[in-house]
Image (cartoon, rainbow over all chains, first blue to last red; front, side, top):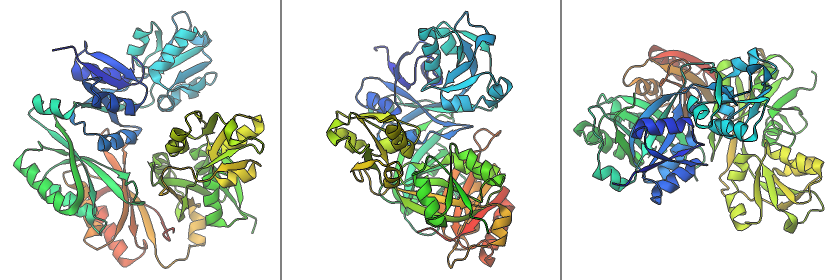
Length: 279
Length: 279
């Protein structure tokens, strides 16, 4: 079998690349992509065999754009993983901490290191399009007064040096990633596991108590929900589509009963994937 | 009584300013602010008497940052309104459509006018920090090859010209705004109305069926829910806090019963405001 390629969003050294290696092994070949929609497009058109997409962060919340993409593409979730987000202050090898006047990174990463900036008021926040990309940029430009906030992998890849490790304000900072495949692959090579999680998306009829009735399909069968997320429904202002994760294999009889019950009260229902819960 | 001042986020001519005028009258004095957190800070420190904050858009979804701010400040919601978002292509007075090579605007606005860019491939998308601010900038810089996407109010305020009206892809584009006051004002001048909406925030105990039990407090009393939104709970990875809007006055006996019931199953509960539903 040919070496497979996994697409992720961001530059080499992004946290998404770390997720890809956790999900597919350290030696997996990767394709960095500019935008999230490129991941879905490249997987659909068989340019890659897998895509790794961030779906939620414990501080910033859901990556809503990717929930929308999951709905619009038929690319099943076959695995998930959780990556601890450790932000490091990184600089070119000969730039000492005292020389740094500005620090580049993605605005979300900057926003997660505010204590560092408060303690170092001489250092300016410099928003950039990507965490790892900011390391790449300061190295390529040979900046002598600048640092970047990114993963330790990014420092290694671009030959930069870590000046301060783990400068994030809150250590409870994790991002959850999905591994997506094409439907035929998911059918041919089913994932193995003892415990399972199932993700689905549905819309309710616009009647009183509709969401309550939908959740009853699970609660009345003692099925544990992990998460529920609402997104606006296109073309129907002030109506919503719901994404839900529950504990259980989609083919378990109790799950099948719950899904049949949910179909009675839902206008639309689609299973997005069934996979072992990530650690 | 002194003329009151309402803070909003963005430059003069932002859709938030239109919301402020709908909520408080066309003559209200406004204070444009750079960031959402400035709105909350300026209202709390009495620099302004009211703040107007966007909370959700029918295409882009919730403005999650403002849900987080509502939790961290005691500034009650006293009214809401919905503004139809109409994006116009705007240019300096003597710049014809044929001269335009790039169009500045907030990335969300650009993303809502993709058909326009597809039909005009010679025009480049130029992301900018603000819709109305992009009109201000092209006027101040006297750009002769550039346009901006913003409200008609922005064109008027900065003396620019509308070249194409309503270039948004989807006309079902509305933003819902909250009017916030300080608690003492809200108590002294209660809003009048026949129909009421109540917004609250709560966390559930981390037990199976917790959300279902929470919604039961409303469903079992035939109370209509408008919306439910989840956000990550700080310090407790993979647990969530829920925001919920229901139809009814918070002081109605049935609402009081529902809230008492919800308290039995919720770890934390706070009412964020009670206000007439916006049109």
